Length: 231
Image (cartoon, rainbow, N blue to C red; front, side, top):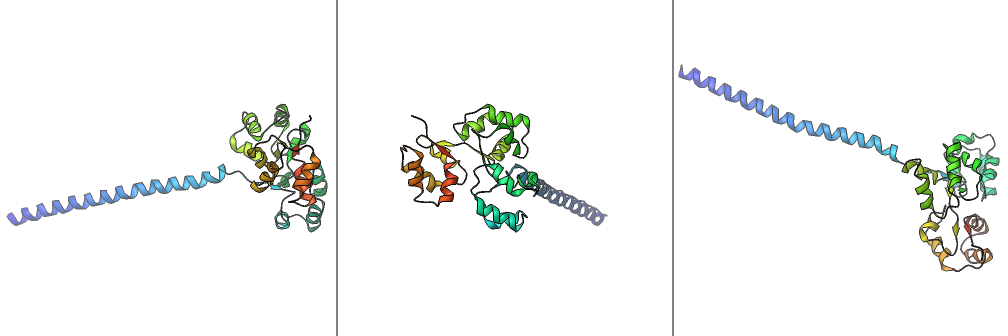
């Protein structure tokens, strides 16, 4: 009888240990499932927040343009005829190449202060209302101002997307480094040169000084981004 009682006690204890171990193992697995789910959610949401970069037609390489699926003839014309000083000249070359979809990938940035309101609608996703808002806040004196005003109507990612398609021209003698660096294709070295030769007395001086560092085509492209206040 005592032997049977001892066996029962041992059996009960063993069962309790087994159940306890099973629960502990279950608890350890649950957090890892939650972490994995969070990680998946993070990966899904990340691309949605990314802002796609649109190629600048005046700066894209031959390989960049070929990757868009353009014909060899169109690519050759783009490389030969640039810099394009306005979007209409560029669109003429594209002809029937499916411009609506192409403009999501390649574009010539529009001057926010001089572009006709109707031409802003060439920007993918910009309709009558937003084209009007672009024009409404002229003259723009900085990209910061554009972000602030247009940010009243769309979220931050959409504002950043618009910056692929537009620029704010800078006054050569007063523009901040931040505003100069916001110009398409202008890096720190060129921004330094812009500043180095201040004060500019006319655009002829700008061409002379900046022409020491770039060729005629690039100088022509840069000139459309700048102006001088009238005395």
